[in-house]
Image (cartoon, rainbow, N blue to C red; front, side):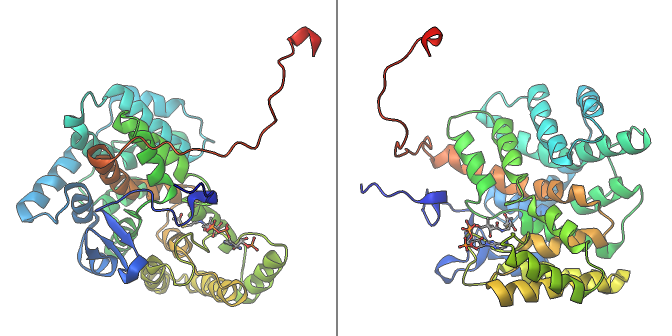
Length: 373
Ligand code: ACO
């Protein structure tokens, strides 16, 4: 094989997958053959999670049973609650997610691969509760129950966050964002989960690695950074002026650009943008939407960069009353389904992932004992 270095592994086909396509070869973005456009119109996140994990859409009885299992698994173990109480109030919620997942893995370890789907369902069910138990404990001293009557994960999260039943529109909007965030082929965090899995380690170790990878602002952390940017402007004109200056200074505009979507727009962005517009009209956030739209126009016009999935999810989450620091954890709740599908696939078909490097360090040299250096 020819030794070619591909920085960032851009364009490298690292393995085969049956889970999703990301718009190459004219296939569009699809999960197990179903287009993202259709899934976001027709399905609930739970159906999509089932599709990713089990390979097929559930029939009614399978979906009912899956929902029932997820709702019954929402309670947190008591020792996990004490760990969440020890995490400082000023910690980043992504650190809470990473620590919570790791701690759950220590308390309820996966002792054999036969248990993998049990671990997946338990984690999907508990992630929102972990975040919001920690949040309420540190903001109001309340030790909340992490169960609710809401069947859908999106509504369950909003209910625990706000302490009341969410509006149907907010539920539907967050549900769509979860479908969109659920899976995206060999992105950095999924690849991280696959690398970790390839050593035959346990499920929680792979997800913990993926959460750490998603946290970075070049990946999942971009939705939080995009919101901080949008929030700085009180008018579209002010936004345009500042964005032009940022581009002049060669600064990155978070929520724009993508490793895969260079010639074509990120198909997820149009879907989430339409929801952001709708929720802006419903909730009186038109100005925020107009500022976002102007930023999008300027970055496309000046740099030829399309908005990615994180840009309009940021304004959408803000309009649903979700604190900015929780945006990336919401990505975790959804992507945990995709990561898990990849862990299962990697275990079934993959090989140890261990590339190699070209050495460019110092030439061979003689060791000098410490007292003579
Ligand atoms: N703002 C300004 N310039 C940008 C941006 C941006 N958001 N993205 C890329 N560029 C520029 C780079 O500066 C570089 O310019 P140069 O050739 O003059 O040096 C050129 O475009 C190519 O950029 P790369 O970083 O090489 O592209 P790559 O494919 O490696 O990066 C990435 C993709 C990391 C997503 C990048 O576009 C970026 O940093 N975007 C902002 C962060 C972001 O939104 N991340 C979320 C991605 S979606 C997701 O993970 C769910």
